[in-house]
Image (cartoon, rainbow, N blue to C red):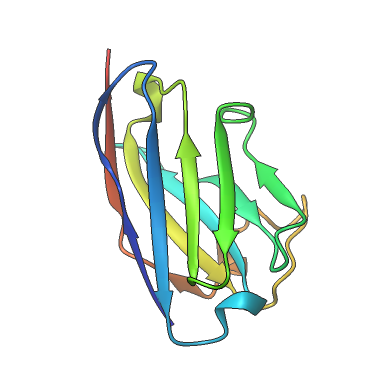
Length: 127
């Protein structure tokens, strides 16, 4: 499975960006998917996740109400709509796939749960 994130860029605080992650190979529609980010000098952290059927979504408290994750199994893509961006959202954003298909509030944060990772896309939010 190969994952490729795109859509990053430079945006002013308060603005919006939409990230997309395209998958090739494997059984995309059966995977749970997540977004993580890594800010300069910090560890990679959980942002959002969605189960295989799209019925359950999870968000880090820091992005809840501002970001929205969605998937399109017909196109093998997962997106992250980011609104009301803040300078502290500046990071490299990564998409990841969990072949088990089901995440929970206990597992969504655990990077070891995810089997495949894509290269990141840089999001820079200016103040």
